[in-house]
Amino acid sequence: MPLRVIFMGTPEFSVPTLRAIAEAGHEISAVYTQPPRAAGRRGLELTPSPVQREAERMGIEVRTPTSLKAEAEQAAFSALRADIAVVVAYGLLLPKAILDAPRLGCINGHASLLPRWRGAAPIQRAIMAGDLESGMMVMRMEEGLDTGPVGLLEKCAIDPDMTAGDLHDRLMRVGAALMVEALTRLEKNTLTFTAQAAEGVTYARKIDKSETRVDWTRPAAEVHNHLRGLSPFPGAWSEIDIGGRVERLKLLRSTLSEGLSRSEDLGESGGILDDRLTVACGTGAIRLVEVQRAGGKPAAASEFLRGAKIVKGMKFS
Image (cartoon, rainbow, N blue to C red):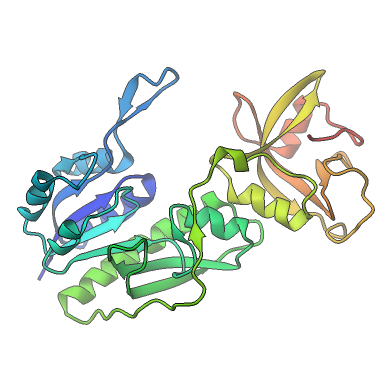
């Protein structure tokens, strides 16, 4: 029998799961999402979240509370008489009264292999740390931060040059299918939950702007992971003189330079080594594959070099 579902999510990552639940025949009684935020160049336009836009397109009631701590909000949530609440990147902590309101509780789609990378930025942190795999997990929610027992998981390899954006898009699709499977098993009372391991807990703290500048003195593998972990947003960056003016350049894709990854004798860190945007690091080198000038669009390195004179001996700072 189809379940009566409250869906709670905000960014584009959550949208495929919302669609998949509806397409599987479940009744979505309401969608909770973050309130519209100021956007546009002047920050004057209020822009609804991707989940709100999709829910309104689907004709589902949308609620956008700034908090769920008030008794009135909790009563309104409980009045929906949901079987289950599905949470995917919602962005608000759920008080115990909310967690306990649905008949089957609340389940969360989380983009990591828990207990590794609990918290706000698991996709970015996994790549920045050089992890070789990630995945999606469906877990029963508790009051702790991503501490609940796990019902389903699907692993996903992190390819050597994969960016956070690439992994985001892959896990977004994996997560939608996994959540539908979880709801199907809940319907049949065949979904079992297993406590997370006590060892191996790490926290994926929110990305801070202070982390985004590239430190070329680090080993090439670390610089490469830093770049791809922050791509496409907020984007790792460095500065270089282009035509007599220092510009900030976002570095969106890179690859480790074959044969140079272990070399100690490449000159000054941040130095340009050839005409293909190969850059020296503390040890080894990376080759930039995609960059973005301020105010411009992402461009392949070869395209960028046709409009910017960057030659061997120049230096990123």
